[in-house]
Image (cartoon, rainbow, N blue to C red; front, side, top):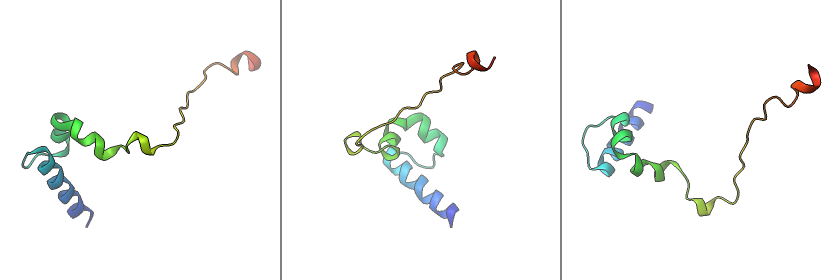
Amino acid sequence: MLETMRELALLGLNHRAGENGMGLGDIRARHGEQLAPLLVEASEKIPRVYLLEAILNQQRGRNG
């Protein structure tokens, strides 16, 4: 069933891109700008965003 869903999704992506029989990699390479809205929620629907960043060497000075 998952394979059938994958095939239907590829058919839909091909249709959106105006292509026929392309694989996901080719669609991504040639029509990435058309895929982005399908993968990312519109920014006005997101109330806040958290960015995480590693702080390197913070504990090294204390522990040796």
